[in-house]
Image (tube, rainbow, N blue to C red):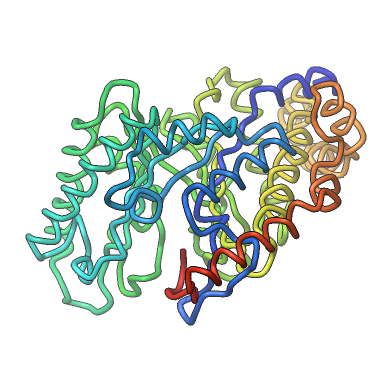
Length: 397
């Protein structure tokens, strides 16, 4: 694909940023405070809108129901506030892991009251989606067990399938249910949705509007994520991504900070599925799920968005016809070199020019870092927290 044609494809490449990525985060040992971090939904929207203003590619913000829509907060007002700032509310993420009632799981729990609480929470989440105009319900479960014989695995499987089917049917037309998977943590013996095959099966059983969500950090070492992506694409079951990077497990590091070639290979499968096999990839939801414990929140998000654009553009520049010819002739070295040439191609110059023509910053990260916004918000928010006596309790968001 010619570089101009590839750049035009970026016009519809949108990345959803997460509300929790703008808040103070940490580890299970504690939360690390940053003076400019967002604490309220208003501040999160302000930060998400800033990222979109500098990058031009992040028009939606994902929300976590328990953290962003507490009792008394009207979802429609949150959606209106987002619109006023120039963005929209994106995926709705129920929280089925934080409350004490979910100690032994949510949808798959042996505790009937826990299952009822999960039902009520997801029903509320679907209503929030209606009121905010969101068309994606994104589900991740901490459900699992820590010891052999702790619970009946088949009973748990059936309970999970029943809940997902019920929630799928409760959604309005036009909404997609994304089913995420994770091999371990916090459940260390078994997780109820442990891999892409289980997520695929559960999604199929749930209904036609259920798809699989691939979190790039949710795989065991050595997993071939681009193979999973290709398989799901061909099955019509790839709903979206939670993009991040990792060194060990689910580290939630910024995209490409550890292995940019891995992200490029994922994008390559998406591009080739479209160009070579005629698979419609336009409905894929590209979402970020990162924990910026140490990096400044907005800077990290801008850095991630720009990196995603660069790697996607590189994948678009793969000459598909040459690649197919090399593959057909079993030219292994030649085929790999075609990948490598695209990956190592310098794209920042053309990207900067493309941004200028669309009224965006040529270098979003540099422009943000010199804007003074970070220091200004740090001062305002630090003073606000001090006046309210905020100490930053809790361990995550």
